[in-house]
Image 1 (cartoon, rainbow, N blue to C red):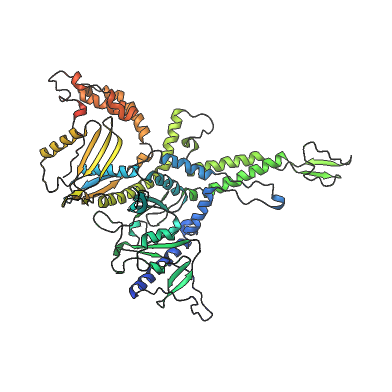
Image 2: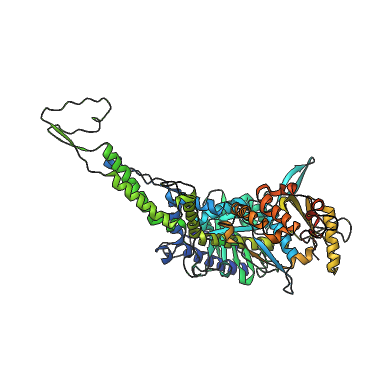
Length: 636
């Protein structure tokens, strides 16, 4: 998209004019994107006070070097004996924090309401099931893990969400067909490197408020041909050659890196709903330059950037686009640890093999200090070792540097590494609580990232998963269905089925009619299934809000919830009010005792209330708990 033109002494361009000379509208649009591209490059490479007068690119490079923890360059000459290793304390602390934050995969939760601002719990429950389905059947978990680790390293991180339908050629039934590519279709999650995203203003924190965003990448020619090969301008895309527009309005050919790849640039301007593609500088979007709408849109058909920006810790009051990474936060501590660590090994080596001073014996070099070596010296010669190092002092400095690093990150005990004397249970709990406090801001930043990713997913689900396909019979539509196995519901492992159908379209159902349909679904589902029917047109037009509880990343995960429930069981079951209600006792036994331990097998151990309650008794409502109506399953 942007290269270097050759000019002669008079300033005239020496590059050849390109055969690609598009319309005035395309030239003007290309020049606009070229200028934005250069502004974005300048933003990435301009020194910023937030990063101690480093640019974003320099900050990323420094953090990446600290994260990789490679040894320093080896010493040369007389110093070649010195230790050049580095202690990966920043990397270890980052992995420890990431282990805490990713010990349990968290799911975004939905809140649904219609145009009358009325809550729709059934639709929210359905959307949560669909989000869980797509998270289970995608690389989201891997992207989440790498994203959390990336937030420890990079000053800015980007999580990209795409919903695509790609096709491939494959042999099926003896025929070579064009079929849906299961690998590249559906939700695609990726973490974009910091140098592949350009933006308009470093002092706008909210990503959706950026004036424009540019995505750039080096990709294979074949991949771009699959996307744009039918475009009328594709014939001008040549590997190893860029086309640049200049202020005179003409395009010139410029040599590109001949690495077998081409440069793909996607420019997005949310305010004007404009998204355009260039490959090696060639315009490959709509010939009508005024109509290039965003691909990713909300379910209300409004443009939205499909990347989520996130990081480790905030820097200022929601003004600066970037974040303070753990590598940046621990930079001084890491430098101190490395310095004292190297001094410790150097001092230890000197203490083990001390230098010596001779008088009258000439020079005694390293060849003398060998096992079983014999060296003859004069009877009056003196050989005096020099005690000039103190490894203990260096070791104490290492411990002090590590203590400072602990204040900047997480206590080693909280990360599972025993330090010093054995801690009591109370001391360990206090350390864990302190670690939770230290990681609290980071947990909230990650929770915000998951929430924003959830919002993009919800928009794509509402837009793409509710679309029907016409059947062979005129007027008949077929919609997608989804199955989620092994969901624990009421102490049982159940498979949740979500089916979109227009069978209820246009029907105004009373509460009683809706309940009757729900009972029918329960009978059809049986004991190990849960059926949800939803009208796709109504579902797609609801307003969905997404939230994430950051405490799920910290103390309130499944393990601690299990411990709390089991601890609360004895008190709950002994409560006098509970003892008067067999149904309540059954629920407490299931939810607080059996389910935390046995999950979906909990219901196998529950008694049948119909055998415990006398005929006509009112204590349990007259029917077993497992036959009560479940979550509403019919959406109008």
